[in-house]
Length: 249
Ligand SMILES: Cc1cc2nc3c(=O)[nH]c(=O)nc-3n(C[C@H](O)[C@H](O)[C@H](O)COP(=O)(O)O)c2cc1C
Image (cartoon, rainbow, N blue to C red; front, side):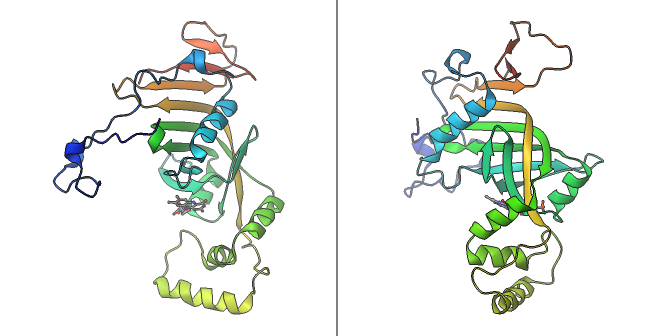
């Protein structure tokens, strides 16, 4: 599916976007009409299964270095939003897991308001998955297990940081790094007390596939509303109590 989709007239001799190309001019080809996301081609009408299928498609693509990178959106209890990237460290029918500092801005948001959104984008495939759901803390035993598996420098890096708090300068972090390395040898770095995992339990997944003709595909899987029955026109029954519908691009 991957191809060079940038019009050659917009490229420099090095293959990057030419200097005189404005933001407005950037326009590339996505998928062709022989590669559509059609309901009949979704073998199992269940979003975890489809997510896994898409993930397997992208994970071995050499141009995608971090197929597990996703943008996590949170909001305060007053609805002030913020978004940042995280690395998903596991997913299954229980949800999508990531690790962070509970005292960070995102952690504080989730404390007040567990509603979150998680968006993956896999550029060479022109595919994106939007997930909406509830974030819940994982047990600290999971955090310990994952923390132990991290390289020494990553463990020290986590311990150095009071994530999202202002600091005087980078030198403070280096100073702290030096102290911590003296204090803790490899294999003995303790997990920061307030560093742990979350699981995002989805209540909706949207699978988006970009098309060159800009008539993109969007299939939304969601939980049915109370008392809702599918009409088999707009909304269809999926598996495991999911319903699905096609959204206009
Ligand atoms: C690709 C990528 C992956 C990242 N993964 C994580 C992660 O897994 N956990 C984390 O706490 N921050 C991660 N970060 C840093 C966050 O985007 C963010 O800067 C940090 O978590 C502080 O966010 P907050 O102040 O909104 O809480 C990542 C950044 C990028 C660009």
